[in-house]
Length: 286
Image 1: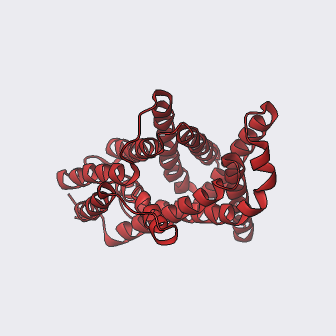
Image 2: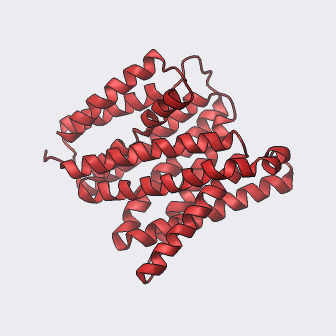
């Protein structure tokens, strides 16, 4: 087993920290507006920034634009499925299930593409999965059959998005990120519009609070896009599975920010998960 390199580890952990901050900011926004509106604002604004970047670079779009579009569509569907799962009550269980499945798919793809990761690193992946579960899971959650199914769907969507983003970025990283946002903005906008037209959303929440949700949603979008950038850089600097697993430790960042700003107390299982996360980083970095 060869070392993954300090750069790949640093990029992966940076992506994790940024994604954790993005989820925290997005969580604040969804307390003030409907999730579909938050996602649309977040992804729409980050899309404008990315369009400006590719315009300045004068870089033509890649030949296979569908890869970036599929990455955005699958990620957006995964995010919507996660929100639906969270709304059913078993929030910790849904988040933990989604996180573990999300990390698992790139590991499987990387094994087929890059070969065996090595015994020590595989142990690190397993420890990381347990750490993610302990950090995200809230004791006392009662499993909801539909919620678990949606959480698995969310993990498949998000994990597929990570794989496709890596593949698309080989052609052009700026365009991969941009096309990903094009698709996710369209999907989230269509989803929100469909809910509004069918009357299944919360009209009062969506109408009166979008201004208060705008800033945290905008910040969530910029952080999520920046996290995507560092995840891709990590996958280029080392192995895809290492980048995906290290980046998927983001619930730790969300938990720490909630404890710092919202004074939420970490449970014993979450603290144990934090310790295991550190052990996983050491094993994966070996």
